[in-house]
Image 1 (cartoon, rainbow, N blue to C red):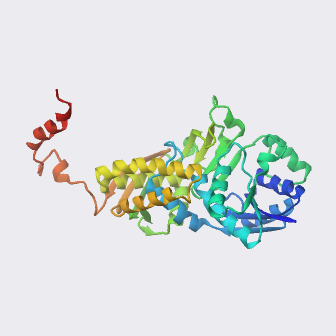
Image 2: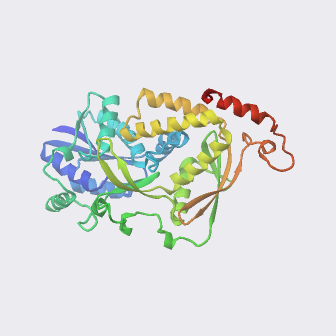
Image 3: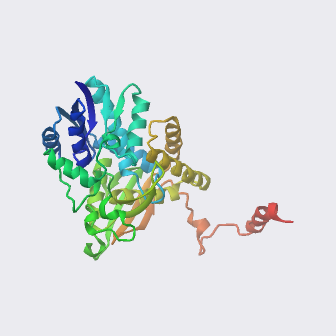
Length: 389
């Protein structure tokens, strides 16, 4: 039999893919990457076997995900279209890399995924495969099979006794990892309606959050978070603690209309409390420690960087070149940021850095002012000179 290694999440799509691939004559081997999934490893093993897989590999990639994928994105300041911190997008090149490794280990000529024909993830998986292993072929069941809706997939699963957790009352597509949760489909496709409360996964609604502020203190070294509340923690530990804290305070919900790679607009719900807290703190420290021209140019780089991640171009020369630029900019980004979390808001309450470019003696309007105000007149004339007639 032909061997295929399926990127298996345990959700509706990939569960149905196992049966469909078997019907097409494939020996189906599953690969699941634990990036902070909603399913436990034991649950995934049971579900994959019950769905007909001959074997399943499960790897805990949370630390690699945090250090090698999330952290570069945080340092770059990557936010897609101003609202999406790229949780799902960042996970795909990592999953694809390990999927290819399993395929090579199993001497499989094929890999497969459960991405839809109108989604972004098909692009991310297949571009990564094309770059890292061009000889391996990709099978995409959702682009080929006769099922045209999630309701039809649910019926297919029932007929074939495939274990699923999705119901016709809640037909959302959910992807969860340590950097955030993305939700799409179902009732969210009606743009005239506010998202139902069951559209969200773990961030508290504002009316159920504490009525007092929660203080947070984050310390950075060369752009990387290293301490939380005065305690040394690895990056993964910081993310996990801020996710719990932020979710309790209603931080990190976004309701997005975004531009997909394939050219259509879609509505996505995201929850990313730790991501938004760290992004806000990191950005604030950069404003204190990076010079004006570099900071301005880095904004342009951040936009392109986020686009590359979103479109699946992680393993590309341009991405590597932008990383080199970003890493140089992060050398002075050392210091401490204090924040207050309150009912969905992130408020900066303190800044401290030995690399601060803020000089009180220049900025003050009180005693101790050393700024030479007589220089301003000539400075303004020089700025205006090209436009004077």
